[in-house]
Amino acid sequence: MNRLTLPFIGFFVVLVWLVQASLFTVEQTERVLVVQFGEVVRAIEAPGLYLKIPLVQSVISFDKRLLAVELPGEEVILGDQRRLIVDSFTVFRITDPLRFYQAIGPDPDGIRARLNSIVTASLRQVMGRNTLLDVLSADRERIMASIKQLVNGGMENFGVSIEDVRIRRADLPAENTQAILSRMQSERQRVAAQARAEGAEASAKIRAEAERERTVILAEARATAEKTRGDGEAQATGIFAKAFGQDPEFFSVWRTLQGYRDVFDTGNARLVLTPDNDYLRYLHSPPAPPEH
Image (tube, rainbow, N blue to C red):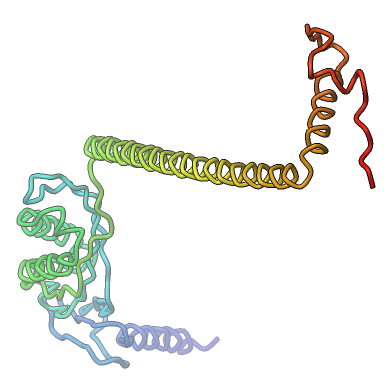
């Protein structure tokens, strides 16, 4: 191998490394700061291919998309002195990488602790002026807008824009939850007892009305029966009277024979009469047949 070959290869390798070390790309989703000895010398927002001085300058990238931070459950006291355990999340965007770098440093995650403290303070301040009913009603949007405004004010010096602050969950503390559940159970039991009492009252009214209607129907039926029976007996009496008027002798015989049948039909009847009693006349001498 020629003694000039090794230096040439070394020079070529160094040249390639210098080219690679001096080039960097900026993606569509990034904002970039070029830092030289801890000082920012350039801020780049447009995507593309750029140059930097190798070994002297470094590149710090910041995501310009929406970022989210979730807060753990925090206990807050409402305006009506009720306590709530609130879980929230915050959506933000890094709008000024230079100010962000100067306030927080090169680590984008460094904002989370500061953001958590400011959001927690804003939650306590705003919700302390509102009641539980406000939090659970349509006023919740107004409450969240007020919290977002406060958080934006607290983060304005950090190069961050707060896009949204939302309450993900709001629960009562365990002891309050148990007390409310007990009150709800008592209320449901009271409503059930009232419903049962109203049902029993309605049932008694229905039974009383049915009994009254039954009594009226039976009375009307008895009256109708008595009237029908009276009409029948009157018609029967009229028929007997008419028949008696047509042939009194036959009718007298027929009635006497009917009496014999009714008295002696069972075989157990006893009569104490004298032999010459008129009632027994047809037993001594049958009636003569009618003359034609």
